[in-house]
Length: 513
Image (cartoon, rainbow, N blue to C red; front, side, top):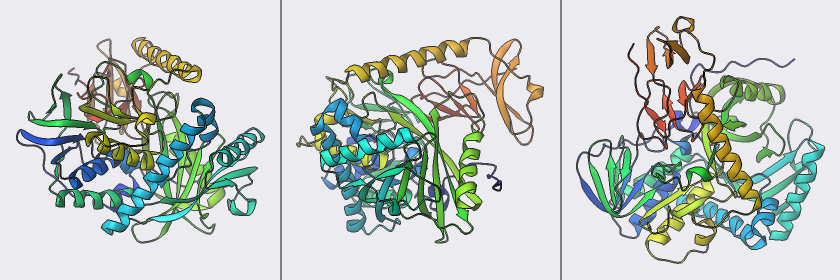
């Protein structure tokens, strides 16, 4: 029987904990710029840097800390191998567009490597192969079909030799993509940020964009100040400004989990690995703060706010897998991330709607934001400069993706939102406030009303109205991150009600007994 490895009491990202970012002031006056970039993750920072290099004045706004969103909680694979995607892209979009998707992501990878070399960024960048493997008969066939898709598209890879799959458990087969990479995302983006500010770029932290004035290019912030510019880039992972619902109904959001562990005896496999079977298992090595090699495991994804078990169980399942096969003895870091998917497996990059060419968006990178987010920045830069880009039409938000499989996804996603909206309004099992233990949260009954409550380690209760401020769905308690998560459009709030992740821009309302 494998040993049980205890998780730390609070989650922490390996990337965030071992390397903090520079700090920047909040916006404290009305300003003007050529371009306003909202969201300081990989897309926003890369786009801001590229535009500043072109001589434009750029204001970069971040609601919290820079690199504090999804980019700081990734598994940080820089890869064009996005699961078993290419066989589906060929069926759905045709060979030409499937090949174009591969080329776009390869260009994103090359662009990251070029920035690292040009700016001399020390960020643990390492080139190595990437693998998708199967452990079941069913997925063995799917992996074979993916390898055939590689051959059809001329992708640098194909069937993996069994000796290349250096995993400590039996596998059926695998498909390999050569010359992919991994790195430390926070170190990399800090390097880009410094280059951006040296070019005159302005960064404002703790400055949440709350609205974009209609028929203008003015961004309103929660600080009470405004930024006026010719063009606005919304790179907030989930577009907060989609008030007409043009993208909400076309997006699906999931949470996934990761941990970084020390190991006793089993060596960490060379390469990056992803299982074709469910539950998903992502495997790679990482470098710890003292230069030690850590095992990084990911997986256990589910729709945000939609689960019938404690979220802590997701981490425990990853820890159990690591203990069984890799002899892990300590887990110093564990964290979760939020991933957004489009209807047709392609990101949305460009004007958020027709007639609003001055407001650009980049979203729905699925689990592959390092390459997709980077190429998005390149596309947005070219759009602003009126330069041709071979990937503009492929990722355009106004593209027609409503063929059969996308229609099914559209109906399913909107049915799920409607179901969650109704389910949250129905009476459900609730605790009483006295039932809550310290460091525990949930829905309680107070004065005949449903109230969101969290009792902290000192016994103090924090009460909120459990209704998402975005579109009115009821939020669910997330015990692993101690947050309130919306199952409809994946907004997340702290136990005090503050917005952690949009599209919501307003906090949960407090509840006074």
